[in-house]
Amino acid sequence: MNTFNRRTLLGLGAATAAAITLPGCSGKSGPMRVSWYGPDPVTKALNKALEAWKSSGGAEYAAESAPFDDYWDKLATQTSGNNAPDVLRMSMSYFSDYAGRSALKDLGSLGIDTTGLDKDVASSGVADGKNYGVGQSSISYAMYVDEAAVKRAGGTVPAQGWTWDAFAEFARDYSGSIQGSYGSTDQAGNFQLFEVYARQHGTELFSDDGGKLATSKETVQEWFQYWAGLRDAKAAPPQNISAETTAIEKSLVAKGKAPLQFGWVQQVTFYQPLV
Image (cartoon, rainbow, N blue to C red; front, side, top):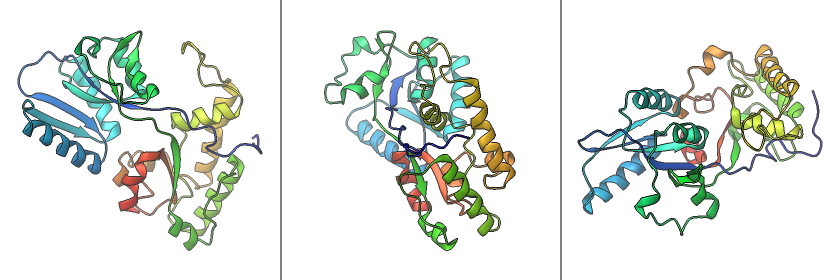
């Protein structure tokens, strides 16, 4: 495996990634259905905002929410059955797919004022020249660390400058020191983190037109071998345990079973009360 002396572990992970709010095309009557993903703090904040909107004269609404992974399974089923929510939260990971198959309404004729948004955020809801959503934010990928857990294990809190080799060594050392715990969560299926890894190998993940994989198959293979090695060393959990940690509240770092967790930078407010 290569060692990247001049790169920090997440040094190339500052790409824009926006969550957007947009209307679907369910065509159903009744209260306006509003749907989103996220943990309890997100649900509380959005319920408060919706109540304020309703009290100021807004229409009746029915709220729907789910953890991230469950949300997309449910939304795919709803969309295929022409029963999608009227207003929904959309991850940029899925936006082009839903926009490309006419599951979202073009907002261009509604006169929504986005001049107060950062230009990259404002344009994040545009696909094929049409505006399908209103951007929420521009965020970066991050690593969260349970400092107290690391110190209890006699380790040092991670600092800038880590290589992937150093990360693997930390994960193995930690799991060997704390029985029943893992040095890291398993990130083999983490698309955003693999994008960082691909850039550290000198390529973008996809070609400019998005139609072709730009990184090499050797890089893909190396990535999966890296995480398989950590699983074999019990420095990352087996797949059956990872499958049970889809919600933030069920994550290994929240349960005290791992000191490290990857996620979007704003999620620190979700993990902090749990750790």
